[in-house]
Amino acid sequence: MERKETMEKENKLLSVCELADALGRSVRYVVYMKARGFTMRGGRATLSEALRFLEEIQTPCARTEKKKNC
Image 1 (cartoon, rainbow, N blue to C red):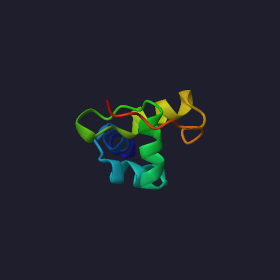
Image 2: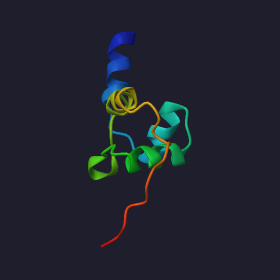
Image 3: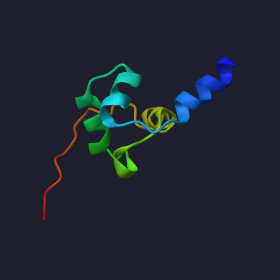
Image 4: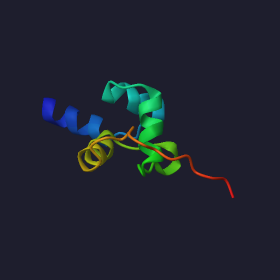
């Protein structure tokens, strides 16, 4: 039963605030992740997507560049 509940939590679509809470980080951390290329389609993403991204990008807050609005 626990395995099923864990899988449901990992596959649930989360907002920025919910994702930050699930990661144990601040909302700003998730915003920096997005600046480094983490995509949240419709403003939502799963915990497993975020963890996979964090494995690929070791430092999501390092040297982010602001995007220019054209």
